[in-house]
Amino acid sequence: MSTRSKIVLGVSCVVSVGIIFGVHYKQQLDRERMHQGVVRDMEVQEMKKRQNMVLLDQQTALTQLLRDQEKSRDLK
Image (tube, rainbow, N blue to C red; front, top):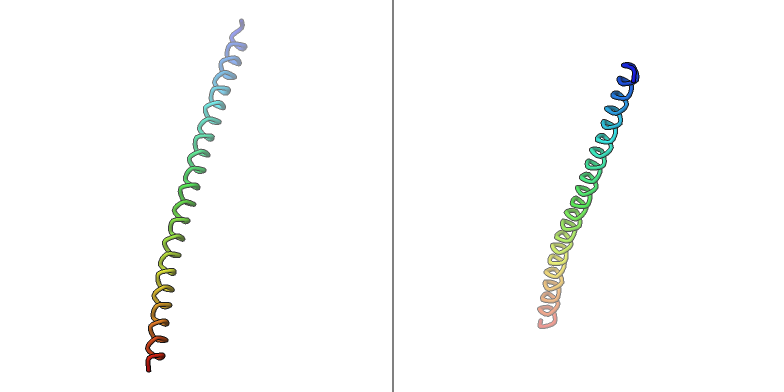
């Protein structure tokens, strides 16, 4: 084998290995980003659930207050 062909073979092997590692690295980054998106979505859902519970508690308190006021009016 000539020197030139050895150099071409070596360069092509290095480039191929570089491409393979690059693709695997990008796949790993994509997986991490997708997982972070899922975690973020779960956090948003949990936050909305807490907000809804606070609103429900406020509405329940207001409903009870209105019922108490109606009862006091009916007694008068």
